[in-house]
Image (cartoon, rainbow, N blue to C red; front, side, top):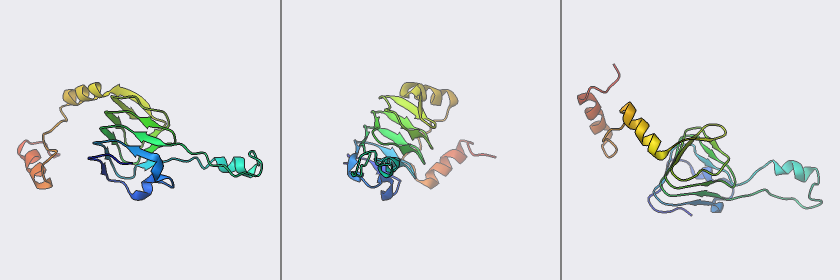
Amino acid sequence: MIGEDVTLNCKISAFGTEPYLVKIENECLFAADVRFITHDGGVDILNKNMYFGDKKMDKIAPVIIGNRVYIGTGAYIMPGVTIGDNVVIGAGAIVVHDIPNNSVAVGVPEKVIESIDEYYQHGLEKDVFYPTKEMSKAEKKEYFTKNNLLLK
């Protein structure tokens, strides 16, 4: 299930073999190459070693993404993970634990490094927020040129 106002910059294959086990709430943005993993292929070793007798088992768990979540390029969201509301997941993160609301998580495996409020404060301190989100590419270039923000 995918909620309203969700932008997927990743491919359909990002949802793996059980896309119906991925739930995404509203107002989310996912960068390129994000993957939602709902199964653990390691169970194949247990099957081959007859841990379940004659039965062949899957190890599967859903992935749940809350409201207003951004997931950076190349991140992997692993089986059974729930990501809360107002969360930023950094590029390349491998998320193996649930992420609480209002958090920023990065790394392999992921680690919550700050709250969303701290993320805002650090951005203000570093002066990296600009009113360019809804501008065209040309308008952005003009804005940064006019304000002497281009690399020289």
